[in-house]
Image 1 (cartoon, rainbow over the protein chains, first blue to last red):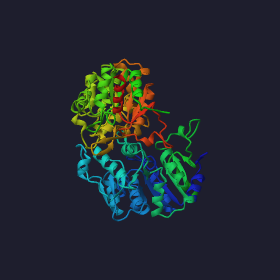
Image 2: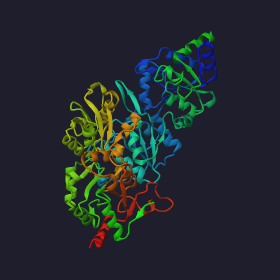
Image 3: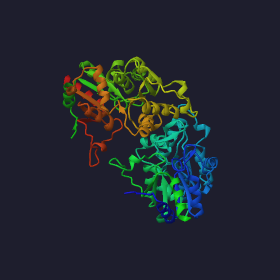
Image 4: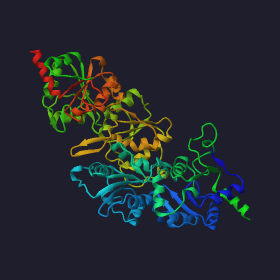
Length: 302
Length: 302
């Protein structure tokens, strides 16, 4: 049973209780290019109260630096080291959790933002935006040379996905002993400006299908993203809250990580999915209509 | 429990019992470009005995006409109307089973052989090898016009697979009411001349994943292929036998169609997969080492 927050006292208590606040962005702080009413004020309030603020997004096409420009454009205070995109978390996972040896590299299916994060974490890679792989010409194993130093295939959303990239990744995963299969996130679709398009999970699906096995997934709801944050930031799960708009990513993610969860209804999840006979089995700890509701907490401070 | 054929009398009895013989090709009649010893003689024997001979392959990149050239090159007698490729079966399914209205069309992810079969069956299509879809440029819904006459998406092995094709197919499947999702076959991999590469099932996996639903599958082991053959050829399942080298395609296919099944060990399936403690749960009616073994049946005829 979720607790529905309503009074200014409810919001004050939640702010008092949690020291670390993890926010999903789209559907929580903004909708597309439109800020959620009150989001800036609430973030400001949390910072005033010395809360640790983190932004946790599954978008793997952008690096943290390029994602920060979105915050800047919307006038939301954010620092690069507060932003956890799945591209960054993937790079951290490879360097800090998987401990990829210096003489090994990864083969990338993904875009410039993923490459940037790998470079910043000191992870050597091939593939990615390499023009040699940006081709629709027939792929032949006869002219392919297997690079024995490739110890993992990393796959994120890649709008230049093609048969050459899939075939090379498949070779590494089946012929390089122990080669790991890592995906930035498993979102089946993503909301483009004009509608839904196939997401990162769809781009990696051919490899999953051809291999007959599931990858290591980094983004929400996988706990791996939280492990990556832990490798960089100290926080106590019992005083941490994840704020999100999607039950099957954000709220599941918080629950898998043992942190509290708050659902807002300004994004993908509607009221009918959390109440009534057809309610989801994924039950957040707290629900409120909008992150802007926390502005009422200031009333009890005054 | 499978019956292991061994004596000339065993082979004679099988030939006597079955009037219609369905053959998988690669691994049964040939291995790559090398004929299985005795295959030509056994096919000749079956034809002499007035048996109906059919060739049933999941290869959807070739039309029957282009597949027949392979038979010709290897000196194996075959007629176009005896060859059932999954491209052809898909076209027959759309025209004869699904009864696609004349004013409707399909969107194709696939190669020239699939297009040729669709044309021959009078199925209108868009996509396929259209140069407009052979692109790695970013895809935007802003410039995409949905064709309301697209009533099905048909997906086969396509080595020019890309994000534009996947995105267009996804739009038709989610925005055109009742749009059907059809795949030629679901093979996870296929054996190229120099090793395994992602197969037709891998190429359609992004759509399956993004939609969260399974397609109608035509090729083996789906019964749909048999239904398509039935629409063109009269045969009695109780006097029909499917000869194949793969348990999870050929033998399952025969079993799903209620025909008898014979496994040969000249292809993908090894002895250890059909005997001993780790034997597959897919049990063919009959097993013999090679189709060439049926030559011994002539001894009992003499």
